[in-house]
Image (cartoon, rainbow, N blue to C red; front, side, top):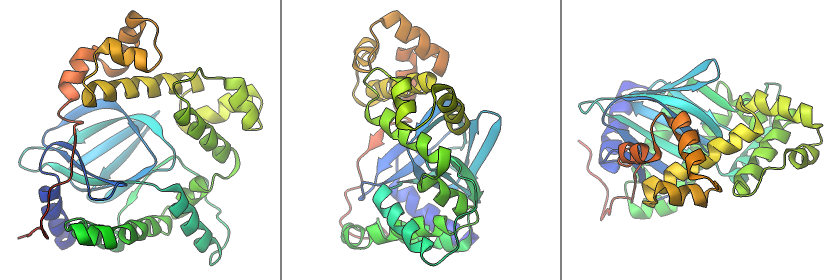
Length: 310
């Protein structure tokens, strides 16, 4: 990210994300990120999104691969993936970033427009990508933040600025792999649709043979391709999803461990506590206390006009 653009972007984000954690923006699809200290490697679950960092850095770990996202690299997830991440930040130089949730309809429209003017996609689809940010995308990000600093501009210009960023990502250095993933091509696409079903029905018992049948695969082939995309099995994926949902309920809704366990489908509190601690390294109560501030979702700033950046 060019230095002058980075400075202006960080100045805006410092005012838009005043407290640690996630802060809602004036657009539903955009959230601001801030961390004032280093966070050790911890399990996370991201929805399909674009993550752009202007200060500090994060590292994502999935199986034996590491993906860095910082002021020079952005992260794209084309499917919801559980992985682990660590954060580098200090109170003097906090991590500042923006997360843009991918809108399926908007992305499909952009991909269709690109397909009409370009050759067929040849890149292999990827569920997670870290790629260098170029000057054009950095400037597009700055323009989005400028729009989100004013309620009227956020309403009128914000959606177009989000679409511009998605367009820049789709034509970027690894845009072919992103487009291939988001158009649900081949086996990757079948697994992506299965993941959509799991996220829609995660409270229900998981019927792997039914998912495999919907994907047009045998159960063994479904397991194989599912692990290729997510690096885990369908049953473990669902377990991870439920545990992440339970953690969010304890953090955001102040549910007890027993209440969260029941809400996500556990019949045994002891089994929930055991599996939660195995995944997060702490008991449910300890994890909720430690992460409540970090994962607090704050409302957007009550802005009467454009923020002043010096």
